[in-house]
Image (cartoon, rainbow, N blue to C red; front, side, top):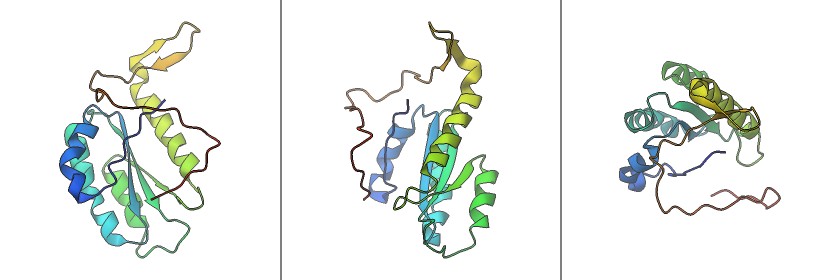
Length: 153
């Protein structure tokens, strides 16, 4: 199970971002493939994330709007992801393309990274315990209805 916090990448919320990053084991940084400036800002968000998250944080870069023509050379995204130890996945919030792949890659990498810290459940299954006690207190959580329509933005 993942707890997902969306900081929306808006500069006005940037000062609050470190509290979301604290102790994070995984992160997805989403940027717009049709806006090179969006991609260029990713480096500073990664720097902030690495300064406040778990030292072994698993990072995926999601190049969103893959259903449209990119405005720059997307191979730069792959090179950047590799240089910061992240995985790059093309996604589309509109069509859903790449979203399952993104969460699959993230899940597998979290498991591989933290497997040595796993414990056996009562049913003999490996359970990767990610809670470090740094979770935000008094946060509301609700179960997601898989059949409910989703929307973006």
